[in-house]
Image 1: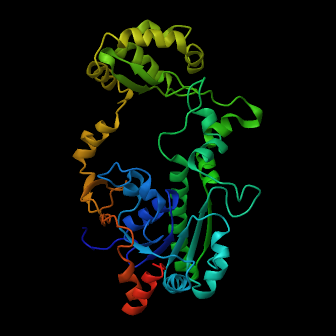
Image 2 (image 1 turned 180 degrees about the horizontal axis):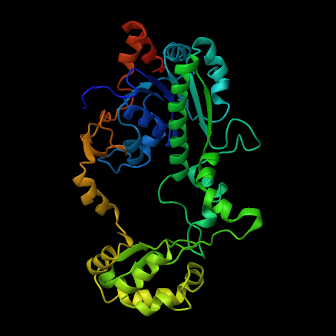
Image 3 (image 1 turned 120 degrees about the vertical axis):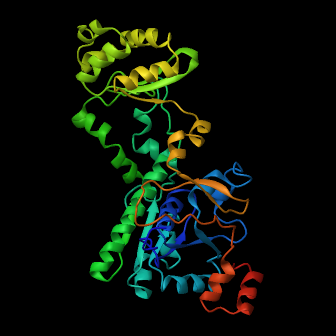
Length: 397
């Protein structure tokens, strides 16, 4: 670790009633910064995301990603003793995160207003599909559904077929805004002395990320067309096949780059001033004809040769990697971004969080088994061994 051996959220305790992705991704990032995260799960089965698949030596890929460095406390909060334990835990916690159905925590007596009475410094963060009020409040919200509601599907895919993102983009957006809102609330608490209530909506989070196509379609204008992996309004910008069956992704941003691209990559200087393509608007409108010219050139070259020309011309480019390529990516390896974390199925590799800070290293601790820390946490709360045994017998833990 760094010279001061401290992390930003050391001594901060987070309690989370969480499942799936948005809330767990938020709290895992708090744990990365040193927070103690106590994940409240259902007895025996735990977070249902544990059962999404068995791709990581029998453990779920989603769960592996979002739950390292946490403690698992199993509580059936419909049991009075379990609820008492949770409330006792929240009396001294710093942050409470939950992504149950809207209104569920209020019915349980765990609303922000309820919890403020027992802990005025507590920061409460609610994560839901549509927010705590409004006509869509009680509508079920999964990642794909929010991608649709936020307009993401309408601008993603091919002209013939809308496509979802290949990862849980709406969940990730909500988790990120919950994370940053909690960090802001912790800073605010240093000034005011009291906690905040944060209401994060998946729709609003992804809606923010949709601002470019929203403004592009401002005042009833035509929205960006679905254009596969190509840019909807800039050309050439996207995938192009090369010899040997590989694909290169490239992007041009301005007229200077277009001229250099023609001269050094296509070896066709005259094309730079061709009246069909001498502005981005014309290249966008004539992309079918221009693509044929680029494809004819690239098909005679290997991926290495195309990359060499693009790099020499200082044209932005990348390979279209598959997952196996990312696992072995030379840049990630050179920057030592992979570490191993412990888990119930043995050590598994994990990417360090983005951002290298010279003052601390990220916390990269174990992924918990269901209920692994239950007895330890309950003993910390002052419960006796006999009471814990009784709770276990009646299914409260």
